[in-house]
Structures are given as C-alpha cells and as structure tokens.
Image (cartoon, rainbow, N blue to C red; front, side, top):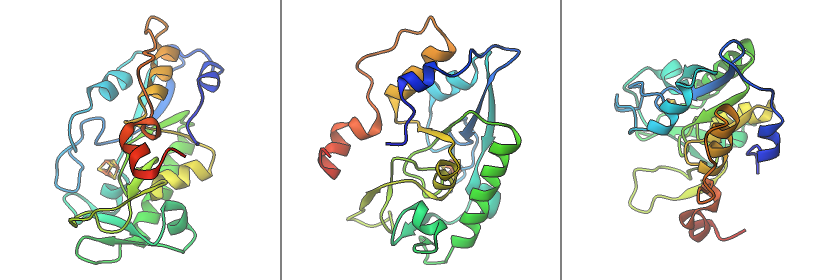
Length: 209
Ligand code: SF4
C-alpha cells in the first residue's frame, strides 16, 4: 500500500504559515472547472478546507487540461494501469477510441516537474481518474453498462509514486484525518474514517485481500 502511515505523517516537520507544507492537489478537487465536461467533478469541501489552512501552500494542477484542454474527450486506460502505460505495456484511449497515450505521459511529466520544482511534500489527487487516480481506476472504457475497475494508479499518479512522492486520494479519509491532525493539532482524528481500500465497496469488488 502506497499511503503514508500515521507515523510517517507525524514524523514530518512542523509546518507553519512561514514554512507551510506544500501540497499538490488535483485542480478539480480545489474547485477548478477542469473536468472533461467543464465541471469540477463534484464538490469536495474537506479538500478545500485542507488547502485553506494557514500552514498549507497548495499547487493546483490538472494534467489532462495541460495536454488536451477543457472540455475534452474522456480517457481510460486499456491493458493495465498507469505504471503499465509509462512502461509501454498499456494505452490510453478516449471514449471515441482516439489514442491519448502520448499526451497523458506528457501531462504526467509536467505534473512531476511542478512537484519537483516546488519541493512538494504530498499530493492529494482525485481517485478513479485515468491521470490522477491512485487507488482505483477504470479497466477499459468506463462509459459501458458493465464498467470494470482495477486496483492501481492513473498515469500521473503512477509517475509521482515511482518518484517517491506521497500520494493520497480524496477517498482516503483515514489518511486525510492524519494529515489534518498533523497540520491542525486541535483536529481530533476520527476513528471511523477509512481509506478507500478499506471500504465495503472496495472489499466486495476486489475481495478482502
Ligand atoms: S485530470 Fe485530474 S485534475 Fe484534471 S479533471 Fe481529471 S481528476 Fe481532475
């Protein structure tokens, strides 16, 4: 499991307004209208609350917008996950069947450049996306009646993980609780919060292991 543990989170330095934690966030999670259809893919108030903390400096980035603009076709990975795309074993196709692989890899490299240039400490990314997904992504076309899912990251998240960057999704509520507590010691960690791989849906779809 790639998620940072509570101990790892606690061992990070203390972050202040003068020395904030640097968080790369999927731009749509921060409210930017960069989804494939020109929306923000929903509302994520807990992510907005996180990046509004005084000791957080957020870098918003949408890899798909970087390569394809908005609105755009809907990409999904075929034949593997983001690691496989990076290694040339899988391709990214749009919902219309157009090959988007090269643009998705270029977008991932640009996201990594932003991370390195700004010494980002952690990335909070939108799960299920063929670019930003980190726990679960679609397995082939998602706009089909029998949509299938696979464990694993999208292309951009894969490149960050391969470069040792901490990645958390908006559905990893347990890990986000640890992060909130690290940044705001008054925040009481909810022991009911679970990460995406601990949810009933994940366990029933993929099995308990
Ligand atoms: S590529 Fe990432 S940041 Fe852009 S809309 Fe999709 S999930 Fe959001």
